[in-house]
Length: 374
Ligand code: AMP
Image (cartoon, rainbow, N blue to C red):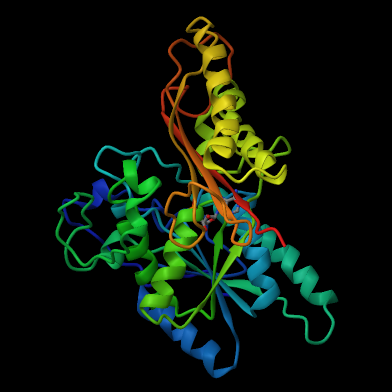
């Protein structure tokens, strides 16, 4: 396989340094088992060739800083397609002007290493596969520059910013959209661009970002995009914390306290599974957990505690994301929550405070689907 980086373009506008592209330079680690594309035409060439050879493409969009959650999407894509395209692009338009674009983890070399490792594993599976078993492998990484992704106007994160955007309302105004008004405009816009560049047979998204899954399904339907949307269950640590690229910033203290989000959602799910259907009962169970954890933390000294704010705890309709007063048991619902873990007030010598030494605020989101009762 080629070791070349395809379609490298220089991006010398004044805005380039602000855009913090994913791959620092072309001297970064180059993979052996797949090609890296930095621009669209060369990727399209490969896509055309695959189509002519009746191969299928499963596409996994990511912002890098890969973990087992991302890898689980790739594994699923390998089961259903001959070729997997993975994009690694930290999309500036989904970060608000005061959000963590500059501190978002960028780990190109270890990402490439992880992708090569999973490709080796997939090759072994392929060697053992029986007839008719699809066992795809990663053939392309798309790691575009921001100049490629936003070829005319610089990408704007302003609410009234200029540019070509995809907006999916009212879905994008709910939940995460409440405190992150440009977030889903950025997500829908970048996914539309990525889908146009890769024209995949199937796209793979994680259940972890439930609102994203609902918005992408709506976008695919409303814009007649010729791809199937697959949703893969949330990969978790053994204690239940959802894997996330941002977890590297937590450190031990905030990680332990942040588990409250999962415990709260599980308590709410438990209430539903025990037969409750009212919002008050279901969300009351979740709020009891976050309230208790927060009061325990408040009772500790600044060098011992980790404080957080509950941004929302929601019980919503699975398709519209409208808040529910009562869960219709034949339809189920979506329980979701967001916690804002504050920076540590005081740290201790030798304490593992995570990347950024406990100073980086961390937003944790998680959700559980309340399955319809038969
Ligand atoms: P990101 O790089 O965070 O934009 O995520 C890329 C894709 O990976 C999205 O579809 C996410 O929903 C998915 N993803 C992130 N974390 C997890 C997880 N813990 N389990 C499953 N999928 C995940």
